Image (cartoon, rainbow, N blue to C red; front, side, top):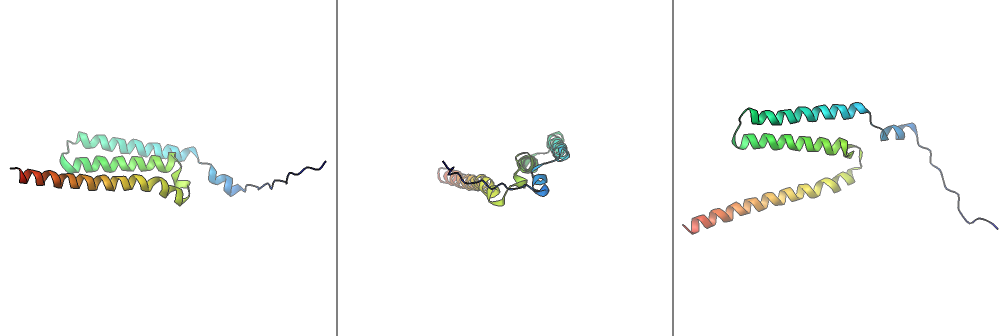
Length: 118
């Protein structure tokens, strides 16, 4: 009896493709060091006793930089296809924009009610 299975085509992995899948430990150590520096800077913002929008702006900027490093390197987004990166990053960014619009509308409503009920 003959076999009805079809032969499987084997694809050879070239050295360049295999190298693209491997990441050296040095990359991770450099990112870890940069995360340590960014965390130190965020603590120094509190130590410098900054107040107001400057303080929160610096803390948020450092937080976003650390999150971007973690997503890019440790979650391997730096080496992914652009469509996958967009599929993962655009929804949270859209939520942030919508939350900002809701906060602006809430402030407008609050101040309108304050002016009306005084």
